[in-house]
Image (cartoon, rainbow, N blue to C red):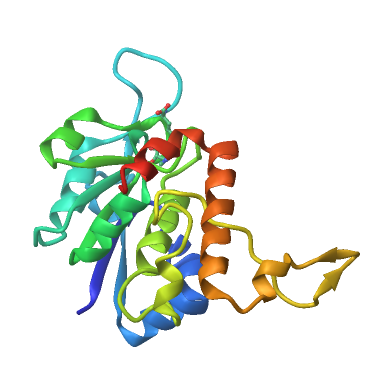
Amino acid sequence: MTFKASVLTLYPDMFPGHLGQALAGRALERGDWSLDAVQIRDFALDKHRSVDDTPSGGGAGMVLKPDVLARAIDSIADDGRPRLLMSPRGRPLTQKRVRELAEGEGVVIVCGRFEGIDQRVIEARHLEEVSIGDYILSGGEPAALILLDAVVRILPGVMGNQLSGVHESFEGGLLEHPHYTRPQVFEGREIPAVLTSGNHAVIEAWRHDEALKLTAERRPDLLPKAKAGK
Ligand code: SAH
């Protein structure tokens, strides 16, 4: 099954961007997922093909016009895929939401620009606002690429070693334990002896312990959820 991503943007050349490289790029070539970047400006009907206008009520910047964006959205067949709007006002993206999206048939993603987009099209086209963090980007395109990166890497068959998806930070509710590889001694620092002991039960216990310590130190907010096994 091909996971279908359609992206509405004023900068279609930003796609597939880094997702044309490495594992995601090979998966795109194989057809494990598809990407269609739609130019919003193609749906502007006036002779200047304008996509934005001044904010009602005044203030700085410009606002993406609802009629133009609605036409762009309507050009994509409504096949039940979730329609997302990248937006700093959205619900913060989590690994849980990423997993849900990866289990579906695809996504339609609207990339905002300027001050944002007209509220009425958000409501009329039922756009789900998604944020990638508490900071402001100049446009939704890098945010869309980040969301798609997180989704594509867990699609069936995309990641070489499927198991490596299960132990990541957040998947078990905790941050991940530290990693080591050879050489045995690096600038006087040794690999923790337990990791070269060959005792897998002890190694698992050590890793869990390290993950707990790290999470308590850096992200104590994650601990209650991790304890509940969620
Ligand atoms: N005036 C808006 C910010 C506009 S930034 C506000 O204060 O909420 C321009 C566009 O960049 C947005 O429409 C959105 O699509 C994208 N964007 C900026 N920051 C983002 C973030 N943290 N997460 C997702 N998209 C973001």
